[in-house]
Amino acid sequence: MSFDTLGLRAELLRAISDQGYTEPTPIQKKAIPVILQGKDVMAGAQTGTGKTAGFTLPLLQRLSETPLPKGRRPVRALVITPTRELAAQVGASVETYGRHLHLRSAVVFGGVKINPQIDKLRRGVDVLVATPGRLLDHVSQKTVDLSKVEFLVLDEADRMLDMGFIHDIRKVLALLPENGKRQNLLFSATFSREIKELAHRLLNQPELLEVAQRNTTADRIEQVVHPVDKRRKRELLSHMIGSRDWRQVLVFTRTKHGANRLAQQLEKDGLSAAAIHGNKSQGARTKALAGFKNGEVRVLVATDIAARGLDISQLPHVVNFELPNVPEDYVHRIGRTGRAGNEGEAVSLVCVDEHKLLKDIERLLKKDIPSVVLEGYEPDPSIKPEPIQKGRNSRGAGQSRNQGQNRRRGGGSAKKSASARGKSSANGNQAPRKPAKKPNAGGQQNRNRTGSGRGGERAVLLGGRG
Ligand code: AMP
Image (cartoon, rainbow, N blue to C red; front, side, top):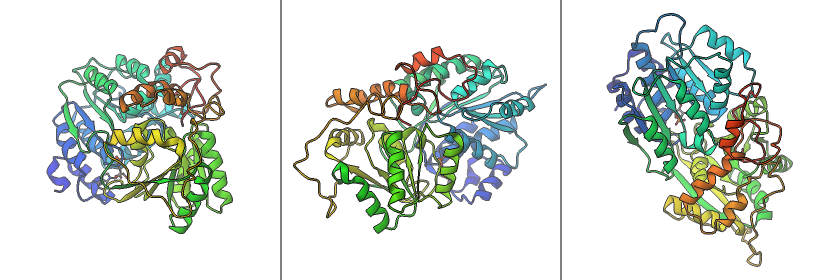
């Protein structure tokens, strides 16, 4: 099946062919005709499935077909994403696919100066891609008007809720034309009860589209667990990268501190490495990502939130240096590999402390991940499991506050994890910030925000994942 049969206009087909795409991905085949018909959509599609083009292409077509409202060019399509990186990537896709049309777009996110964004908005844009915090900053400064929005996209909605953005989303929804006067598209890799509730509030008789089974990992991704003692993980990682000649590896740690430390250790082992997490400035993150993409940086060490939305095509190797506290994060992590038709490999280094986390992940996946002990790295059976450390960097150096909660959860199911996720969202900060005086829940933080002078996606929280 080619793109020609989907009902897209010539300018878009040209842009698609400029990109070298020959066939639509499964989500594109399903989503494009439905969105062109003007229906609301609730789509279960992971990053890497081509979902961005799946909503951007029909959105651009619908925008180019509807007449421009009179007066200053208002925002007609609003795409909200959880992270800056994802916003930047979606914005780039809008530019790429819309290059032969005469539509204007802008991307706004925190961590960078607001004035250039204000200038751009003032000149008028048709498509606005935004992270929730900065969008509300613009709202409070009256530099954006959302009352003419005809299309709303919530991208990676599950992540948005994980990060505690629900209150921000609600505020944004209240500024849009009433429901029924706009088309709503919701994309999510996983479907928790909270997501379903949001969808129920937001969508009108949505078409349900799903391409990968819910909460399961893409089939193309080969997964393996290597049991290994905690103190030998770094050595094993360097050994695997060197001996298998991996040129581009994305490695996940649980904490910002752990990401920094591992990147430094890998550098000492002679591997070019960089860390990417929420305490890094936007410039440092962009630089690390660019270095990783162009091959200068061989190993990118990332925390969950920082890595969310990274679009690195053909990424062959993802390593879980530490398993995530929240099983759903495993799905997101390994979604970085095996993208758009490419094979991928996801390796997890699992020490005795993490057996319960592994069980939770396998329960979510509804399958066991093959476990292979590597010669020379056999775990020492005399080492007893220890609780996963919390505290040392939980209030400023990056360990998730909910690790203790996770431990106390005992045999926590995926469902329980989802609720724990809500708690961890308080730590799920993106922007470099001053440490919070005291821990708080995400919603509370949002209610406390002033909206001015923050310049980032989330207010005062620090010390968590990402
Ligand atoms: P996404 O899931 O939107 O992050 O897209 C994942 C990757 O797939 C991006 O690098 C896209 O450029 C690429 N992609 C999207 N659609 C296609 C297609 N039809 N054929 C090949 N690659 C694609």
